[in-house]
Amino acid sequence: MEFRNQVVMITGAAGNLGRAVTTAFAAAGATLVLVDINQQELRAAYDKEREDRMLLAADLLDAAAVSAAGEAATARFGPIHVLCNIAGGFRMGPAVHETPDNLWQRMLDLNVGSILNTARAVVPGMLSAGSGKIVNVAATAALSGRAYMGAYSASKSAVIRLTESMAAELREQGINVNCVMPSIIDTPQNRTDMPLADPARWVSPNALAEVIVFLASDRARAIHGAAIPVVGLS
Image (cartoon, rainbow, N blue to C red; front, side, top):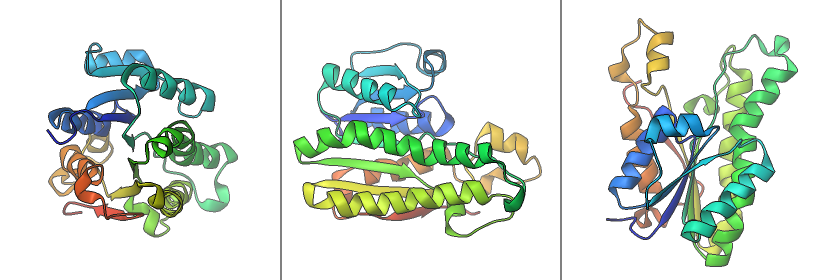
């Protein structure tokens, strides 16, 4: 059990990818701190807490709430060894010149601000411990600008730059920071939105979760600041 005696915090834990990542870490023996926007969604996904599982409702855009969640997790389980920043958001937009302020800010908040808040809450404990793993979720859309996706692409590009900066800052303190870049993830919502597409070509949440677990493991100890494409056949 590769993650026995390790505490793994997963944001966006009630979502499709969050559930897959949780299942993968649970199978590897991890103690889990599962964070999402409200307790109802967490209960719907996981029913109840267990001895090795804590369900925490927190708005990731509220720095104080995220800090409180980190303190609650540490009080119960001890230091957090792994942080998986799964939470984020996607929104198609109008053309860049028509992009409203609220859409621009929403994409930055969900995809970048959430990582800043969890980093503020968790990294100090990792520094004290002298070790840790952080895995962020970017997207292949971060690699080039696409029509009507300016705000989303920019926010996910910022995730890669944050990952690289954090890795450069923290690698000497024993903390690995990396990110994955999925293409289209096979979720019910994407199937509904793209009914004519072939989901067999997309990335399954389970396959993406396996890459995230690898990056959080000691097997990835020599990897710092990487942005790993996970694209399936798409």
